[in-house]
Length: 237
Image (cartoon, rainbow, N blue to C red; front, side, top):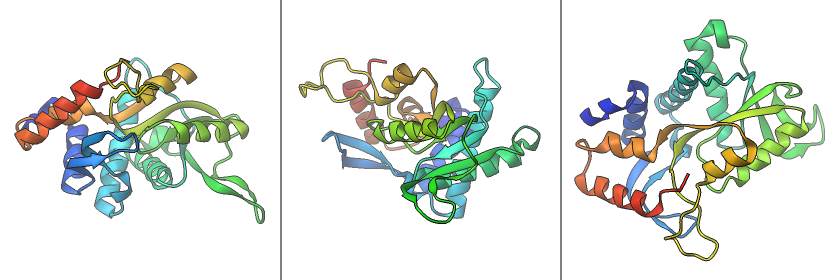
């Protein structure tokens, strides 16, 4: 993937791992919105040791890069919404502690239960107590944002302070228009969440990154279909 040199090395490595591992595939996929997408990203397939290491490394390096920028995000806990977010958050805590033990050696994780436990320790949250802590949510994607809003509500109910969200891929895709007219400018789900909550929503890769990383390295037809899809559905934010 020679053209992926335009990406940061860790992004290029993650993109290659996702393609080689069959996590990012190209073809024709019907989304919940009814749109036919030329690509599909399935974070549920990061279940082998090498792929889990690839995604946790990419999450960790995204956070390290952000915290070395002019707009760092300070956090005490990584929170993984059940179910896909659980291994993503826990493995990223481990990777951050490995890459920068001085800063992240005491970093904590937490995740929620789908249903509250009514025996033993009880409650909805497993892992570090959230009260008074700065919490960053780690998950695979933002589609409509419903699951992330539920996570935010749970964290705040426990007294945590949500400071941001990190996902693997930002599709940069506009929400469906209420009247079904896809030609109308519309914001993305990520853009709506940024405006609604006022905190950053980060991603390892965007659709622009994927297209840029594939040019010259993948099927020209795949790249063309991705570019056409972006032109049709790119969000206004």
